[in-house]
Image (cartoon, rainbow, N blue to C red; front, side, top):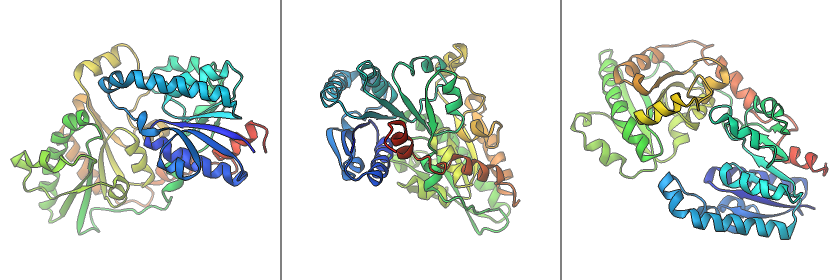
Length: 375
């Protein structure tokens, strides 16, 4: 039997944590768990020292506002772990918080494991130089990461990406010629600022797409998954969009899985789209000042904005970033994609899906128990 302290700081971490706890309990039902947990982790048997909502803060201003409380929680967790002396501390993502705790605990010879490697290979590469002082074992979601970490003298293992296991590898090739009504998903973003930069141009593109499809007697529906209840009001505030057929969804996964084409801002949704084997266009825009500084300071280390393109090593999904983000260009690419009707078009995405699935006998639970000498 072992005692694990598991700390997640976001809902996505709660999902990963719950799955990890479940898998570890299959290896030994007597394992004990405590830490910072959400409802899923608690349901799997994790004793919550604090709730995950205590750390779920977004935006610079919000972080500053809640910083004293976050620092108090950090201190309390370190003290609790020192007294408990668990078999391992497992930090799930939330790197700024977890890595600082892991660094303090490693000095006390407490085993530290970090799940979800920070994307140092994409931006702020110098961060990786500090991983060795904080982490005994890094669990990676992408297969190329362990090799890069080995160069930094950090022990690491690829455990597969959870989305690749959750989404079926079977694909459905949809084309303009065989669908009565086309469903096009628009994902402007999950933050208000992203919606401010993306929504209007995406809807302008939707107008052009609708007009061009109607000229060849094709109907289309535009679906927008969002957590913002104000989304419908924002769209209706523009009179020019009153003739667009738009559905609002809460469930992003369901929206993506039923779409013929996806136009999405760069982020995890691009990977989800790839795993669903969907024709996809990637967009992103930020403030001109932020974009200039990122370029000027060489903070970005990758050639592409979307994960599928980064993983494939070339631009499979067309990207329209910053000044290239224009309604006319997006609509042109959309019509071109909808006309593709090829059995082998999705082959690169099928291979990508296979590459991201959990390796046989290399689940996170298996890797952890082997690392700790329990297997």
